[in-house]
Length: 317
Image (cartoon, rainbow, N blue to C red):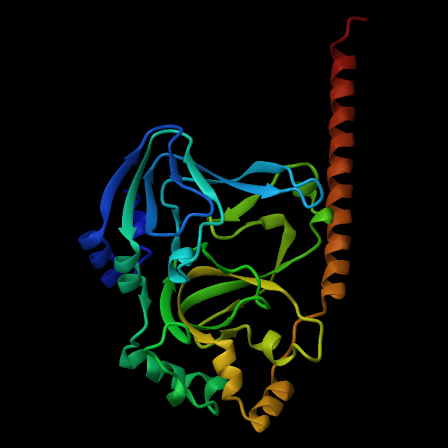
């Protein structure tokens, strides 16, 4: 087993995983999970490689097509977000060669990774978060998983691909996360040549080159607040949140707004700094993309000249 990956989990989680997990082995070509099926297990790959593919319909012709969008290898996991929200699989996973897995069923996964009855230290931590100092933390129904959750996200996990569409605010309790902004994929060099540099799992898979990093969140920071507060004032910025190994407390946006006073809303409007507009970021991305194309073109021309001179020098006189 990939011990470096396993050590990323908190010690208590490691002990629980060993206690309830079981070993599974699949031969080349076998389907591990199927797109559209209800998520019932969490998987951690111990050895081998699996291919993630997505089946979609053409918006005009209705024809179905299946695309390979990512590869999962030793240490990668899949199934977390679908289990948390009891959703269906967004992709299928098939073995590229013989694959060994550690599997955990949904009930045990939720008991280990998702705490709905919050321990006292989680509640006390929320009371120390500066942006929540005047918000009624004591009203949170910690026993209701559709309102408040506490869970750990492994390094590299896409916690949410869209801050606007997500129904949660994410409070970082430990570790850190990155904020990534998705831009126009037509300007992406990797996508334009079919070299999709993807990362993520079966729930959310995104191209690295289509995103720029807006910032980093540390302990006590909140993700999704700016989009929520400024949604009726500014054009929302749809950003993604990626874990660098973090424990997060999830608070329902709906519940948060229901208990947000007018005075506190005004305070947030004065103190929270919104991100640049999508147009500004897109323009910067366009400039960067053009610069990358120029550098690549110049490099190739230089290589061609060197090759030509080399061939001329080797030719008989």
